[in-house]
Length: 371
Ligand code: SF4
Image 1 (cartoon, protein in one colour):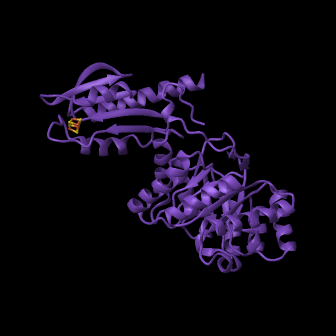
Image 2 (tube, helix red, strand yellow; image 1 turned 120 degrees about the horizontal axis):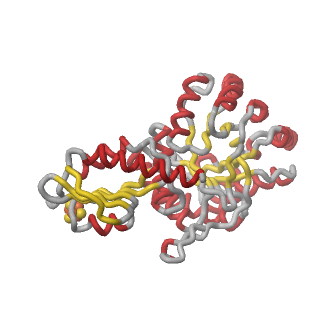
Image 3 (cartoon, helix red, strand yellow; image 1 turned 90 degrees about the vertical axis):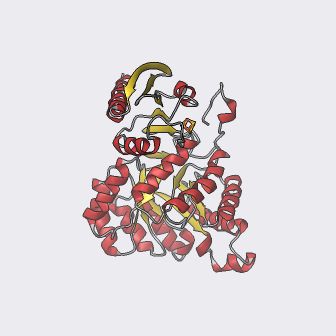
């Protein structure tokens, strides 16, 4: 729960789920909602895959998934898992041998649907490999690839069919006394995904991996994901998430964090509060915010910064942010520190000055946290 006794309308009561481990990252229970992405390189190209994982980790990815469709990929996985700064989930479809190889190679989690890998003996083998190598499993139900018998029973992909598919896969793991699993019921349609996740949340206490699958490009996909996942997260559902975009995995991670930051569920880096600007602006708000976003990308410590064009909203926003700048007249504006008016600063020097102030404040906060 994010508990706010002063502003109770901001409280989100998280669904109680079991906690599992994906490598060293706890998922579920009271663990922070983790942000995932997936590489889109050829996995057998170790260097390219690791580069992408490192870039994703740099912007905050807690977990990264890697596709392992063939033996060359699971061979490469050994070095990838060894060098990766974050736990790796191996993505497997149908080939139970790839799952065993991935577990042996050091994957922290296997994304596999046990009902799709063959008979009970194969399921047992995969579960044994997962258990022997400390892997968890993610069951990944997808509206686009539901089992034939469920499509026949329900007529089309629907929430009940998706949840039934998920529970069938869960049963196969439980029959093997394996409980280190999380589950997703993704769909590209926000109504279907949302209804399926809500039903799933009532049907199991397993940690839930959220996703609106095949959401689209950077802008449309982010809006769709924010609506679909935002509504679920607001209702307390979801322990880990991936924003699926036809875009750089780094963008997926950034968007995942933005969704969580908007709901106060996670904080990371500088959250900029800025106005849309209008004829009253005392400086170019849009260009300034663009420049600051780039120049402050390296800051990981949570902090808030308000960049407001004029005194209509500037002082009020500055009251609620760590650092603020409000446009004034005659080519300068006012800097606010911890909500209080501090000093005047010229528009020309303002970006460099704010970057310095943020970096200084970040070091102070880091030192305080270290103590
Ligand atoms: S804060 Fe001032 S500059 Fe910004 S949009 Fe409002 S009135 Fe315009």
